[in-house]
Image: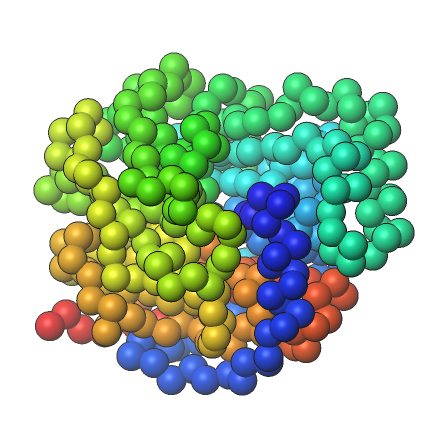
Length: 388
């Protein structure tokens, strides 16, 4: 997701992008590509993916009209055959305002957590958009919507909440207080919960822990950018290794905003005491964002991330320990996206060495047609290259 003041720059860059021809040759063994959800009336984006306590693969994402429209809802789809076939989308959370972010955490004792972030738009947000960002009739319709009594009455839903499920995401509790997170958090080996958030403290990553999904959630640490005047931290993901080390990988944003700046590599930090203390954050050699981390059965750590410069698409990398990464061995999952409105991949090992990675991007169409053809939820099934 992009802040309001950044989206106009995205649209300008999008309009200038040349069409990227498909080229799926890579050092990954691509098995198949699949479109899980596509509707030219719906902007679908920012997926989260987990294996639910009952063994299903559960996918959550947002559906809305456009990137900045005020009416998103969070929906889920599930697969009971390792990601081959999927259910139709089911609404999991839909308030009167804009529910535009989600993450999934497999909790203790068979619970599942859905983290949500809801934005309360105001008419001034839309009148401040640069000319041409969206068709004027669309903006006028959004202004009318956010000025309506029903929308204004939903202001209490603004911010981050957590929903809890005891049946692998078929039903959800009423929203509870809790931190935001994209993709989701983790249950530590000691049974407690840990989430890496980024909306709670501007320009930094916040580490929260709780004993139960109901909280209370305690702020343990702030991961701050060493150069906040030029580089912001955000959209982290977290993983605990078998050694009990916790690693957090972090998206960086340029100041002023620029998706293509050369130094926008993923940063990282780690803790060896269940999140009480953390190493000084350090850059990796991997360019792209935001990250998603997962452990493979062979002990390696996989990071998946979006790649918003030509050729646009989805990337991944493998590490023997989650700390050391080789940029020369980056895995190309897709390089056929028509523009930079893409990414947020999340990966799951569905059988030994076989990965399912879900993400959002547009079909390979005319990149200048940025409003008619909406983004879709897609997936790639692939084989990890053998460990060296």
